[in-house]
Image (cartoon, helix red, strand yellow):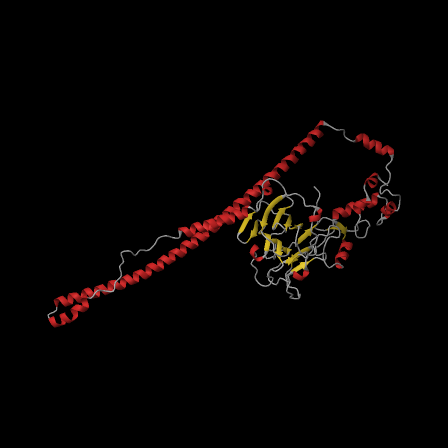
Length: 460
């Protein structure tokens, strides 16, 4: 066996399905390689198209091609291993002693050792440069967290001002319309009195110039009788557009903003969220009985994505029939619970919790008052905490952490990769709640990826 055959291990060229050396290797989109025949046969017999190693699910079956570079390297390994046929030299190697590599001659090992480069000042300098770069990157993450927190707070303030402005304009428009209606009514009444006064004036003029004195005497009492007119001296139209109402509107918006501000804890500005305790990690699985007919779920009930067509499913009371969402199977009635969801690559999604008694049929008003506490992403750049508030994201998150403290009425969201606290709802839970998921539709053609419930890394 040649030197290269000794240095390379057969494990590097082994298909994890047939456990033999690659034969026409092909790579999946997740980066793992298998014999093209093996992986196709594996997918032919599986209900869900996913990688046998990392279990990543593919909504559409990938069109695999031969990895020509890997095939050439595999053939060279076969020839250097001393076996021309499949698995020749390698099979013998596996059947040998416990070690997977043949022993290297001592003379050759000594020669290679002598040729190894000695530690040099330039190497130490390179190490130091990289250590400094690591600290720079860590510092930039702190700046990003602070920036994210500032953006969230000022976005909340901007939204509060915009809502106050909209309500103010509505009040002013309503008051303006009321004043206009009052003015029209007063003008019509005044015009009627003016017309009556003119008729009286004309009658008096005629009476004063008539030669028929008997007629004048008969009509004198009529034309000189007091007119049923109003005293207009104290009548005016108020130009007050509702200052008191404006102050009430602003005070209400300030109160709403303060409530939102409580959701942005100090952790969103300074520190990253602490890792959850193992006992707090909730092993969430999807409840297929609640899934909208367009949603497709993986066999392990850990992934969900939106299909193109409705499936023929029972219209049971638990199932959503209009909004493409699904609940988790695990009910939360007390304590602290945490889970993580992979959202990378998607442009739109909803994640959070929902009350058991929510309406699941027809149009849904997704607000905390109606039993929904969740985070939404739209157009890969807008985070929504509920229907009236949103802010732009600095970068699209890959993994979202959801933390529920049932007893304290809190639902918190974290950007797991950037270690950034995003937002916390503060409320009171009066009944059990369930994890909530919506991969949203794929109208844009760019949102076909799944939401994947992933294991939680509890290490520091």
